[in-house]
Image 1 (spheres, rainbow, N blue to C red):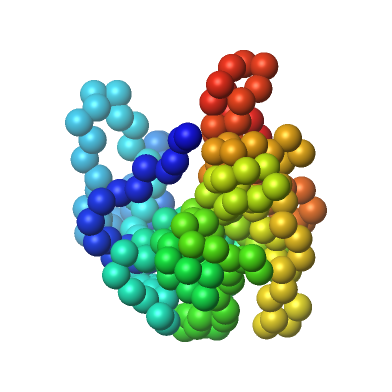
Image 2: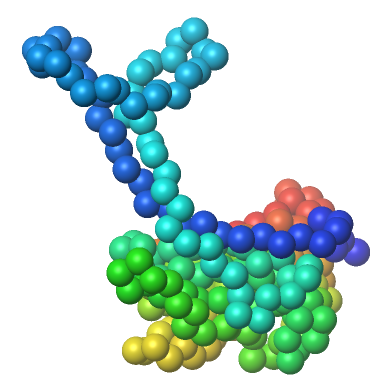
Length: 222
């Protein structure tokens, strides 16, 4: 039986929300301006074919961490942002909660101005130990629909068949809408190792990297 290989040791992972500032470089052939201001430092590339371009200056806005942060939770395993950048979801797949050890959680944060606040902690309605809920996450464009993978969830397909959970937001309240599993779910498929939502939140894509199909054992499917 295949199982997820987890990194060893105590990890504390944080997510930095970044604002990107694009500094334009002068166009070729543009008229030289008198007494230009000092130019900012530019990145140096070792490639002989490097082409000069805009310099991206990343500014850390904040550091997010779980309100109940604990050792080995692996908060930050997966992240996703809404299109406007005002809603963030962060997976913590080894979080211990009411479901048990390493059941996993996903945390939702919202931004007002430059201030980020934890809006809720999501966990599966049938959370159980070692489910790894939160290993993968995805948000719709408006941030009101979330898809969370739980690749080691046990379901009707078998042990570690895997599931993905859909949540919707109304106001500031999140509700579990449904649990997705493969129609041909089988033990150790790890359905939910990767997830993605369409912009409108109406279409979901879920990876099952150890699914057996016509390609052979562990060929994988989505």
